[in-house]
Length: 86
Image (cartoon, one colour):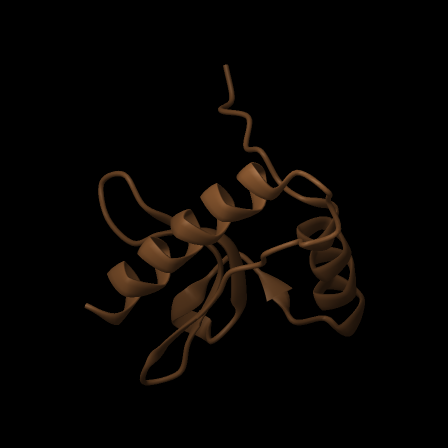
C-alpha cells in the first residue's frame, strides 16, 4: 500500500506548474526538481533540486481561516528547512 501524503492546493498548483515547464523529474542527480525528497529518517522536503548545492522548496498555503492549522504548518515547514540546511 502506498503512503498518502497530505498536500495543500498550493503544492498541487506548483507541481503542475513545474511539470508544465519540464522541470519536474525523478532523479536529483541529473539536476531535476524532485517531489518528496527525503532529508532524514522522518523529514521529507516537498520539492528539492541539487546542482552542487541542495535547494529545497516548502509551500505554506495561508489561504485558510484556521489560525491553528497555519501555525502548525509553518512550524513544520520551518523544521524541514532547518533540517535541509544541516
